[in-house]
Image (cartoon, helix red, strand yellow):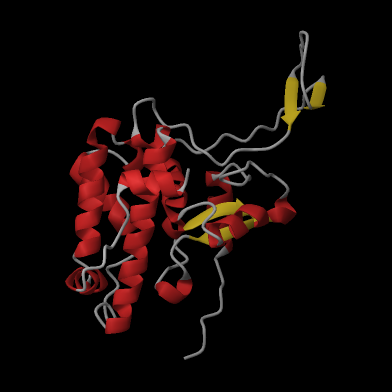
Length: 231
């Protein structure tokens, strides 16, 4: 079967650009020539051209998503911020004074428009006391979610989900939000072990997970082992 040609309607493209304030969802790149629309669930895996499956990114961050430097969990969380929060407001101020700074700043600066150049961070600001605010906890939850994705993908080789369109990357996050009444990385640190136990249970219930366990092979590292491995 020939691969479906990608053709996102102009109206949908406009909506996605408006949603992100015409800048990359992660690094705030606003050069239109560098911006691209990313399919959160790939077309070949059943994704659609509907707005809820699209997010605006720059070519650099698009590559980071493909390489898992920006995780599927972070992409999903950012999209949810757009869906359930307020759209970004475009900053089109024609400032009388415009200052661009690259490097250290000292002294007082007064300007209508202050722009500080340098590295942008793709890390989101999660509430203090949440799993997302604790880097080790967040990375371990990311690890378990990625393992779950990989095991579900492997299960398709057994024909388990060949005729099912139910599984997609957002599914596990929706389940966590339903169970813990908060988005994945907004769940309090105090419930970290509960979240991990839930994810491990989901991994163990996959076909590959059950097969691995029957052979005495662990499906995931413990939190302590993971921290040591990535210290």
